[in-house]
Length: 113
Length: 113
Image 1: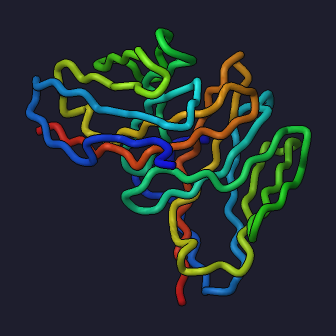
Image 2: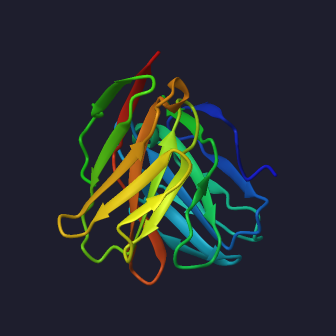
């Protein structure tokens, strides 16, 4: 059982470029999330989704977009990369329910130069 | 949890010691708490959780204690091993009608053989 899979693991972008971070889960979880983690800081929620076709903004959505066309996939799009978006990005998923832990992928380390 | 910037608090222990990692949470209305372990280059890994109607929960070599009076959570690791070396952080679920978690910044545990 692979759990939550994120690709790529590492990427370097130039300012102004765009890219999509991929996330897929094979646990049939309804809920999915995107976080960013800056050095020494807690995880910050970018976007989340409660099911296919439904997405909503988290704490730090500016500069990002998401879509959820299937239960399994939740890609994160950066349209115009900026140095402030240099971070480690984590995707997570959880089952529907009030007391369910989130399960994380191993992250994408992104540098914007 | 509050941001502590770039420098994580560090707990250094000897192999075989018991470790206690503490977390102050922010919202008295939080009803669910999770401890995660994060190894270098990996995503957060679920360790143990506890609901607000409990004050103690035990797992394999780990115990979580919840003190709602002072909004304090602790993780106890028995017979700490070198493989326990990682960053540990707590997360609280604030009841917003959706399972959003707020994450602390973490404590680095260093275990010496």
